[in-house]
Length: 131
Image 1: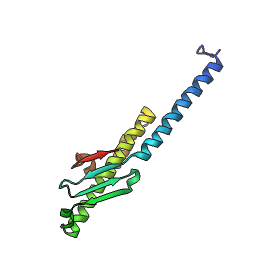
Image 2: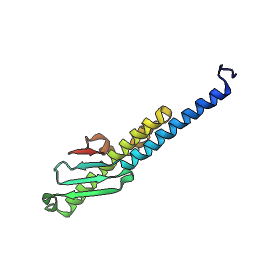
Image 3: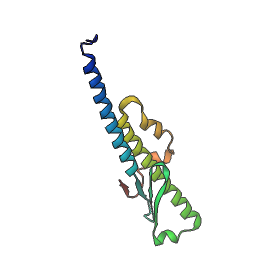
């Protein structure tokens, strides 16, 4: 019997159970992150982008009105919308990781500290879709 009144075999069994639960949790986290994406539509509803974790652009949709914009206007709108979607998916990833690791690390604050201020201050304009 250990100093805490638990048998060594019981102690090991408890550790194995805890390890098994953590493995399940991390496997689910991996699946959740692989399926995660963020879709954001610009304020004027002319540009919609979908971004994957890590900032990879999955899809861009432009309306006819978007194509009437000047090159500079369209470039700016594309970059802004992509940045908003990337910040959104990064924040969601951080929240999901935070759920998995608990209070051990402040994952959300670490990620948010690296995101552009504008992306955090705005309500991620337009229509937001999550997956």
